[in-house]
Length: 203
Image 1 (cartoon, rainbow, N blue to C red):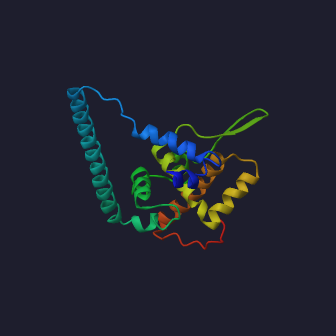
Image 2 (image 1 turned 135 degrees about the horizontal axis):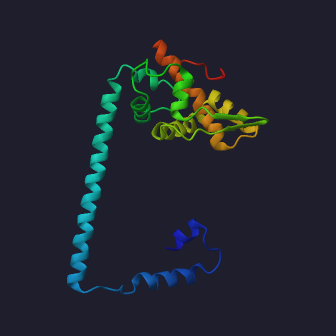
Image 3 (image 1 turned 45 degrees about the vertical axis):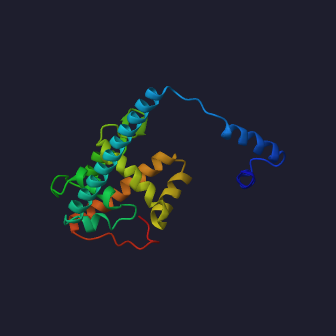
């Protein structure tokens, strides 16, 4: 206990006093419920643990099935060639945009669907650019994670830093990065080519 307190850096003086105090606490008799009550609580805890284990097992099975189905899809190699996309996040992207290449007229349409493209409102001398509220929220959610994960890659990081330096907040800069990545993804899917941009090449 003395060594633990020292390594934790919690105390510089009075370690012996603290060790004695904690020893007395840990050695003291703790409060008990009545035997039948303790048995009932133990069975309840055991039942809850079994439910948690079953839920965890179901999540694992679902993830395995999702990975197998996604990797068998012809678009999988294109999608996971993008930085920041894993098998599961790539499966979510594919599930939300679909594999019908005629579904979206152009890249702007898929960007608007995902909420990555901003909305410009102009009236007289007023000109306001705001984030899109009507969107596919599941695709927007995975897009935020995707863009954030790409910050470890040179080109996306450079784009993000440039937007931040221009005065944008973190969320707006990530949304703009997601907008760029979606445009690249649309192009690659339409042309059946993987993402092969050089690390130093700008988005």
